[in-house]
Each structure stands twice: as structure tokens, then as C-alpha cells.
Image (tube, rainbow, N blue to C red):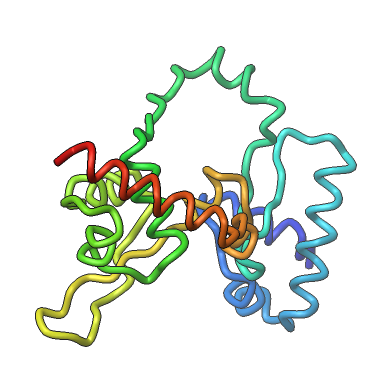
Length: 185
């Protein structure tokens, strides 16, 4: 059996990332053998200079995607999708969720100092954030976190690749936030 062809069929058909364990189950082989096949296939696409790539997300899920070098040609064929513009408010909210997840809207609002319903809802609508469950506390507030779409959009394969904020940066941001609050009052 040509396992690589089966993997291609699975990833192409699913369209989204598929956990390595699910692929191994479908192929009825070990996860280690599956990982070796996936890495071999990934290398094949890169070396053959093909229009598609195989990427690994979060270290355990694989997805077939278009090589970004070919985007200009795709745009000529299809209408350019509406580019989502992330305002400063959305970026600020997304940053808080990315670094503090899982986090409730109330926690986001405490950090931002303003109501964040619209921003969080918009990020969920854009597929950059999602509900992760509920906090075991009075009112059972919804917990939010980032999605695989967030990782793809920002070009990282896991949250560990997000830049770390130094203590000086955190202090600078805190001072800026306090200054903004004073100006708005």
C-alpha cells in the first residue's frame, strides 16, 4: 500500500489539520511510522518545489496548504478574499488572550480597562479565538483561547514560538495603559 498517497488523500480531503494519531489509526500503523512518513512527504514537497506544502501545527497535527510563493498567481484566478483588518483594539485583545489563555472576558476587560465583548466576539467570528470551556466559578464564565487559524495567520506552529515579554516591556505597557486611562478620564 502507498501510505504517502493515503496521507495526501486524507489531508487534501479534510482541508484542515489532522492529528497524527488519527492518521496512524486510519493507516493502521504506529504513530512513529506515521510521523516518519509525514516528515518524508513534507521533505518531498519542499525538495520538489511543489505548489503545496505539508505543515505541522502544535507538534502533532498536520495540514496540507498552498506554498505562499504562489499566492500572486492564485489572486489572479480567484477574487482576493476580503482581508480582515485587525484594529488596535482587536490586536490588543488577541494579545491578551494569546498570552493569558485560557482567559475569561472579565479577565480581558480587567486588563484592558474597558468592555471587551465586541472585540472577543469579533475574534471568535474571525476564527482566531474560540471557546475552550467554562471556568468552575460562580456564573460559569466562558474561557477563551486561540485557534489553529491564529497560529497559521501569525506564522507560528505553537504558542511557545510567541515572543516573550521582558519585565521592562511589561512595565512600559502598564505605564502606557495607566497614562491612557488618565487621558480618557
